[in-house]
Image (cartoon, rainbow, N blue to C red):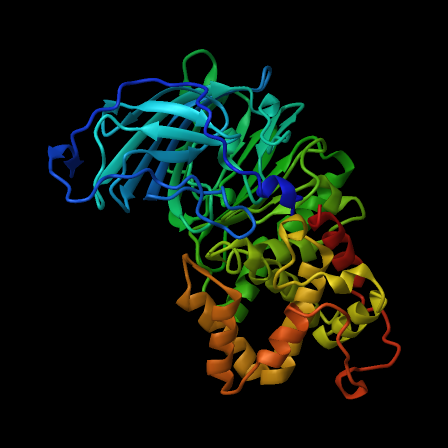
Length: 511
């Protein structure tokens, strides 16, 4: 996982200085697709954030997005991106204006066909004032035209767009879309996507979901690539990989399309990447038996270029991996981790970034379960070795997986102590109840959001007992918990065979 923005950045208050204004807002309220209506309430602005406890200005209030239609043109030689995004949404209150999260230069905005005013506020807020005020429940079609150089566009001094020698990667967490399409950028507002990108012929574009059509030749020696996701997802789970890629297609055991892509720049790391990512369908099939039916319409993975990202991300249907994972040979454990996120993080997303354990602890524990499956070390052996790996006086034990803080969302403790917490829950309730809890969680919250408190309540309901002591000790209490000898396989546990691969994966995932 990439490094989160610091707590200080996340706590910055939104400024109200207007930097650009276009259009002339009017007064008449409308409903439906423009029919006049008189509202009993006075329309008010949508909030500039969704009130996340770690990143309060991420996302926006006052509307709910159903679909993004993203149509782009990209020039690898200059890193210039231009395009139009059409957002289908519904107002959740009477709105006088609303915000989008976006950082590139905007040319125009239309709301329900009419020119709208727009202004800049803060580092990533685009404030839209429609010509007519909007009523609660009204359907919205928002069309934004824009252009810019994403790699040179900084938000809080940072860009989430990675330019490479042959293209670019739009891959990041917890913020991702600000550099390539306007959005309501928080996991609480999920939507589907159509993503279409025109590039010079000979350049490939990989994204989420399936290809509704083959790449389409365009004038000027260009080709348009199209991708479609039909299951709702959080905005940070959408992605672009543009450059020189070898694309390998197949069919998964469940009949779904598998699309894997490998950067041609990987050189000697290429075979290791293929030996890992080509096991995706096998791994997803196994995980489906553990966590419940696979929740999406396609499978696969992207091995990014040698000058790309340094982490991996669970981009929906098709995780993206940095080249560092293959520097010591194949590593299926990172493939297990990122595909476990398809259930824990993608299908069931956090309601608030404080709940990051529901993503990372679960994906990390999936690696331990895979280790058991491969006879490379049981989860208990991995628990024992991990417990001893971090000395009692290590700072590691001071980070709370259940509330790590905005500047430590991707800390070691969220992954490793997070996995240890799940193992302790497993020991407390027994295997039948534990795996029933996991499958019930993924089924009940599919395509939605969840909190740690909801997961604890479900676990207690299925186990038929109070689990507060386990949750409090392992998720919310600083210091290394005491573990009795009876709960360990050995006082001096040997290193499991899977440890080095898991450690390599986690060292990069924390970046």
